Amino acid sequence: MNARKDLKKSLKYNFLALIFISSLIVGCSEGARGSKPAAPSSDDRPIVLTTFTILADMARQVAGDRLQVRSITKPGTEIHGYEPSPEDLKRAVGANLIVENGLGLELWANRFIKSAGDVPTVTLTEGMKPLLIEEDAYAGKPNPHAWMSPRRAQGYVDRLVEAFSRLDPEGAQSYRNNGEDYKLQLQQLDLELRDLLVAIPPEQRVLVSCEGAFSYLAQDYGFDEAYLWPVNAESQITPRRMARLIERVKGDQVPAVFCETTVSDKAQREVAKASGARFGGSFYVDSLSKRNGPAPTLLDLQRHNVKLLRQGLAPSAQKSS
Image (tube, rainbow, N blue to C red; front, side, top):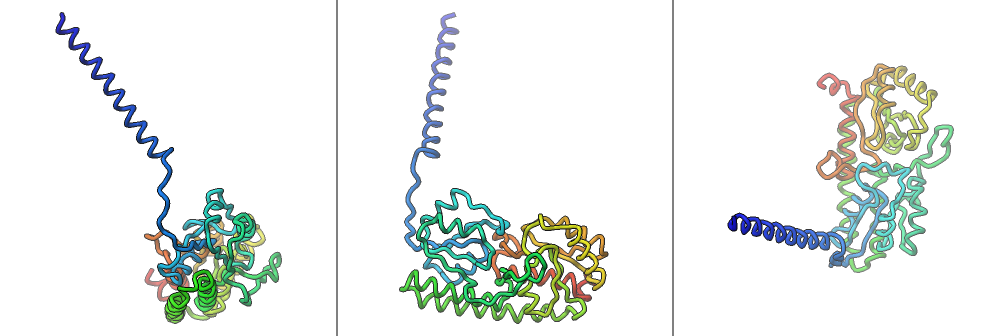
């Protein structure tokens, strides 16, 4: 009987000891997660904040390892109507330079930049003569997607070199060298895309997308452009616009239509079904993919898009697909 009491007593003490030890472990872990302040960063390089991922990629090509380059928006984000979070605003306060596209693309950036205080800002399309939107409601407004032209993108590089050299004069030569190397890559890309698109005959060169984001690329490579809306806003889809695009696709016998990764492709698939065309896939335009995706850089983005375009519109590619 005494042995049984001693066993119960021993188990009771062991159980209480286990609870006590567990509470200590939980308390320590919660302190590590919550109350303990994060260690300060030892990276004292100037911080460059870009409005979206494509500009961040271009900025990194020019900056090399001299600057910290970060994008406000994440891969896959629709940037036209983006609403910055409180966390975005905190990051902006610590930035040394903000990089934007301009031409009315990031209207939200105006408020963002004001909230950031006296952070210098560079607009990469400043001084560029833009192509104008011809669609009725937007007639006369600039098309902001100039980076979609490898030739125009070289102007972005020049602006980045200038801005980074002002920010960090000691690195000016490094920025110039990086900029020239990157411009050579863009020039090579231009030749590469021309060679790929030669397979598409003139009568098939109608690029049909959801957003009118390909005006610069279309001008460079001899395409006509047709779309569901001029600037990304799916609320702009109307029966009239859909009917007009369906008639265009039918009339020109366009074999394939496309959309963009940051918006729904539902309406464009309906256009394809009603017109007899096929849905050829989604382009990357306003955002890069994640690192393991098909468009982790601007150069990869262009190659992905042109590959889809060739597969959709070139007769030989259609037969083999």
